[in-house]
Structure formats: C-alpha cells, structure tokens
Image 1 (tube, rainbow, N blue to C red):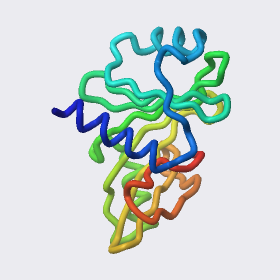
Image 2 (cartoon, rainbow, N blue to C red):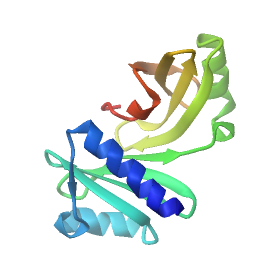
Image 3 (cartoon, helix red, strand yellow):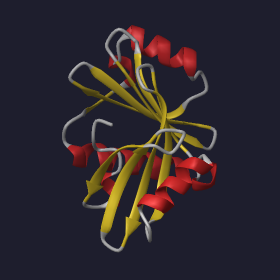
Image 4 (spheres, rainbow, N blue to C red):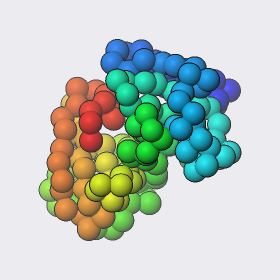
Length: 158
C-alpha cells in the first residue's frame, strides 16, 4: 500500500508539473542507467522523467526517499535525500528559527551536487506563507523560494 501511494503521489506531481516527461526505465540512456545502478543497486519504486537532456529518477532505498538528476552522459548533477527535521544540522535549524521566526518546518532534504557540495533545502510555513529555504551546512542562507502550496516542493531549479 505504501508503494502504491508513493507511486501515485510522484506520478501526480510529475503530471501537474507539466514540464518533465515520464519515461519507461528501458528508455533511459545506458550511461545514466549504469551510473544509477552503480550508486543505488537496491533502489525500488523508480520513476523516471526526462526534461530536455536531463534525466531525473525518484526512488526509494529502504525507507529513505531520493531524487537524483543525471545528464545524458551519466554524470550525476544532484542527489536529494529526504530527511527528518531532527536530522538537520543544529546550525541549519538555528538559522531557520533566527531568520524565520514563527515558521515551522514541514519538509527537509539534504542535497549533494558536484559543483556546490552539500546543502539543505527546508520547507517552512507560517499561516498561508510557504517558503523553501536553501542553506549551507553552517546555516548560511543561500536562497529562498516562495511557494503557493506545499505540493510545489522541489518545483524549481535549486
């Protein structure tokens, strides 16, 4: 049941986004598929999309949810890992509390990129105001994106 719900939510988000195109795993380039399998040989619930020449796969490994992007040559562009709020570094949690008083965290992810290294994306809300904040591990605010609704999480090029 959890698997079915995950697939339904991911499919809905992809369809509602309207930009990336869902593709079958067998249509993913060999270079991308090979690199993905090398990094995550036990991945389950894979859902692939293609936007231009960028592949994205959303998947699970155990209880953890991931999203990963690759170029057509199999080079990974970023890897996002959903994490518990309690897993955020203290500096990140303190920065949210200091710069966004009254907001509560509803979603968090650790992001790794070859170019920027490690950073964190944190979804926060207060009343009807919803913001996705991008922070360094030291709590430096790197950017923020206002969202209309929580389901818009991750719908930008961060």
